[in-house]
Image (tube, rainbow, N blue to C red; front, side):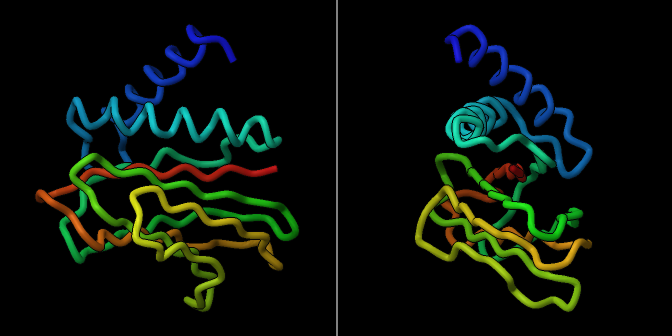
Length: 149
């Protein structure tokens, strides 16, 4: 992908984050930072055959709080779900829960970029839950995309 195309992609994602109806509007410069992080992840995943299936979902979370988003996932399809958070964030976790509220995938590592890989057995509605474990300011801003192949 050319530099100008990457830059345009990053700008487009930043505009979506700034106007995101899925959560609170992410203020600049956080929106641009999150957009750049998602664009880097998207470049890597597109080279592996993935394309964006949902997102970006973006908002702010205070430390020790969480938020869920519901998405439709298809049985037997490979998904990668990538979260990113701003520079003040020290740890954000990501879980995927099925229709029975059972965790089917999670990234609970002590990091700022949780990634989960999941292949659902059943087509249906799944919840993506982001939990802000450690945040140096209130709120910390995050964004998440769902990729499929």
